[in-house]
Length: 247
Image (cartoon, rainbow, N blue to C red):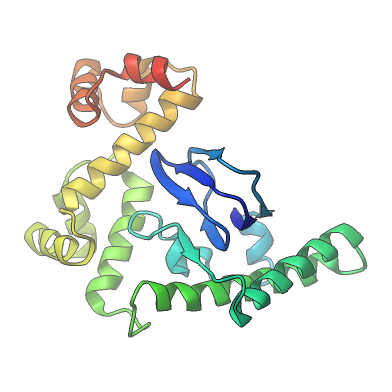
């Protein structure tokens, strides 16, 4: 999902992280994220929902996760654009073209929308690199390894909880993986794994009707008491209390 603001202020909660919202911000989100917003003023803007399949039907060799803002473990979920600038006018014009195309539903409108979406993502990527100080857009080997690591976490967090499990897949030592993670993300490899497990636990507690024990089993904790201790240690409350306070 893409969400771009034209006017109004407020705040957004994305996976339990709060972000102030101002005109000219473009947020990127992916399926399964916890999202809520609070408007201090009436917010006007654009929201675009799309699926991987929709995009990959045309751009199958350009996976969405290659865009830096969709690397959700390490990336910031937004960019800021000055709407009064020429660049801002280009973004607004593109959004309006997409809106018009979706409303008219003329022949081949989905193909046109797909092309507009690709342009929007590419322009957003260019702006992302500029705003977050990426001088060399070509990833070095260390950055590629970290991207592979975070993608592996997304696939195996419910089975593999140890740094050594991922280091073995990546054919590097756990110490080297820790060193890379600390240098590039500012977090130890084990913290990235733990953060993903905690995020999924919170999502399940809010959205699912499973018992705490069932959620723990699904996340790879055979001992329910260990899962409860793990959750309490890193959230400051029991799973049951978190569920009551956030539903």
